[in-house]
Image (cartoon, rainbow, N blue to C red; front, side, top):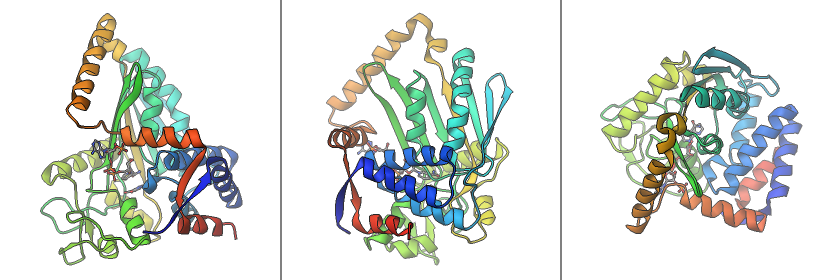
Length: 338
Ligand code: NDP
Ligand code: PYC
């Protein structure tokens, strides 16, 4: 493992902003991207924190993303918002479409937002959190590049396809889970390669289909779905509802579009928001309280809720105003300015 060092959140934010400005991103992009990257670091989600800045700049240099386009929001149907990201990174498109999505969900009881033509690099909890802050229940998912072999198969066809869910809690941080449908995110395998750390068994196979714990072999071979046939089926569902259904590229098409440039995936995302008030009316507090009893039982049983590690990290880091960062990664980011 490489050594970690502390850096103030403000200094890290400034570094991100300086790098993005240096590469010609517009102010709108600098603001949205910096917030996404630094929030990932504050929440100690290393695979989707400021590490992603390296991929963002690589993708820009490969000519695969726009540094200054403005997404276009379409009021497509009473319960459907469409956002054409115009080849920008997904956080900019999400930010553009969120107000109409929440408005439609509140009016109709539920609504979906299809983001098209975006370059995707971020963790989905960041988006889900913003929807639960509006008192809404949310689901989000998207394809990526075809890095994952379906269970029983020998070819990478599926993406790492994250799936995230959020439930607002009246007096608590929301219940949120957010995971890749591969055994682990691709970003985590890349971090293992950077620190020369072996993978866990069951995460990947090499080009010949043999199990491997070598991150380099995993990156050239195939990643595996989590939970065998169950993760594999969920991943296929994501290819369907977050690519075919919304008229965008699936993971195999995204990888082909990349033309071996090594850029971040280019595709769409679907986000669905439910208004509990519309479903439950004046029974809402009763059923939300009953959900709280279940959360209490889960924690009393010795289990932890998803996102609790993340919330604890966020609380600690915001209180100190400092975050940890891998020393080599920090140097690599600083070198982007030279
Ligand atoms: P992990 O397997 O590390 O964690 C997934 C979720 O499980 C988190 O909500 C985590 O909460 C929770 N969790 C972990 N351990 C426990 C436990 N013991 N008990 C209860 N809950 C637990 O994540 P992945 O590697 O699968 O994914 C990491 C990130 O990568 C995600 O944020 C995802 O959105 C992102 N990603 C993005 C992609 C893209 O295309 N943009 C593609 C693939 C992944 P906690 O955080 O509190 O530990
Ligand atoms: O970690 O699998 C991943 C990933 C793909 C796109 C962004 N993150």
